[in-house]
Image (cartoon, rainbow, N blue to C red; front, top):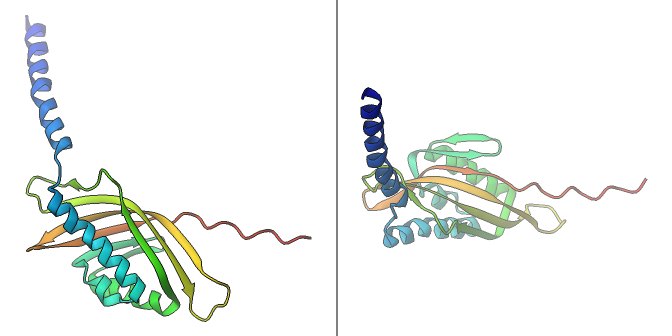
Amino acid sequence: MKTRSLLTLAGLAIGFALPAFGQERDAAVDPQIVQQLHAIGKKSDEAFLKGDAAALAALYTEDAVYVTNTGPIRGRQAIEKYYADRFQEVRYFRHDTKYDPTSPYPIGTNGNAVWENGEWSGTFFIQGEDCGPHQLRGYFASVKVREGDTWKIRMLTLTEHPRPAPPAEPK
């Protein structure tokens, strides 16, 4: 009798829990919000082409974290300095952000935070170098939050595809 009651109780708990998980997983982000979020990627691409560190930093929250392959950079001012230093070394002439078609995903239930993922690629020249363009590409994941009527990047992390090894010199 106790076993049957426990099994019934467990079955009811699972029966109520599964629809809740399904609703959370199937929650979609409003298409207008998706456009606003993807506009950040377009603004980012434009800022890379202009070498505009201030415009890039403006896309981040004050307390943002940008995780690079050399470690995390914390805060909008530090992120702007990172980009300014980078633009002293390189000049981009192509930068593309492509979002995963199933992205973004809501975080929580208030509609003020999402996470996204996708691919990025860029082509640039190194300042003072005559060896031609360099190409990089990789993946990204970000958390964006709503600040008033504006969406901003709270956290961004990137990966880089390994660059091809230079050809071995003949011996």
